[in-house]
Length: 229
Image (cartoon, rainbow, N blue to C red; front, side):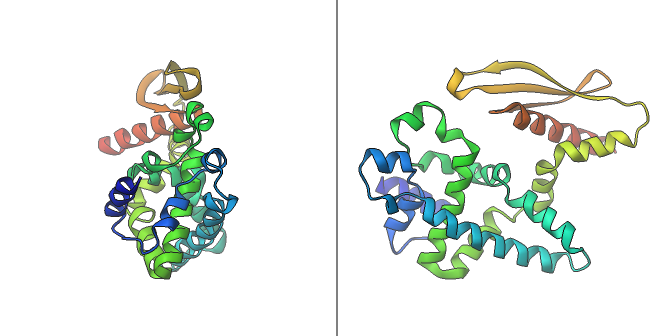
């Protein structure tokens, strides 16, 4: 485990003074219960703290980056940036799921790839950084791994609604999502979806839910349409 912690520290560019904080941020309650670790030893309290720090940093960023944007639009944009799928997307860039400590039951039912768990751990890591290195350590992490490449991330997060809006400006064009297959065992299934414009394949997506696969397919379709304009 120590080797894994060092590997993760290199990825995030921060060395923890208190390694226990990072380990706690990666510990799911199922593992803590199996190992008979005190309840405080799982990531839930750190997640609570990290969520608040993330909201403050992302709010500050959007406020200063968009001086003319009204409050309602800022709120919607922040929600799309820090929602569960968005944080899981950012966490996977770090391969954060590799380092999570899970109980055997949670592991066998696909918990390591579940957006809800991965996004919670992402927030817990932010909470651990805040406690270990102060606000600046958490701030740097959020800007590097959550708020970077934001234009493409926002396009991905809002891909289905953005694509729908684009299609509505083209009279008569029809958009549909078609499930074309499934992969993997029942507890760890992946869905394969095509986005079709007027019946022709425009993008493909794969995800652990049909909604996630549709989002990926919509994103690929948007990138293709951008290249043509």
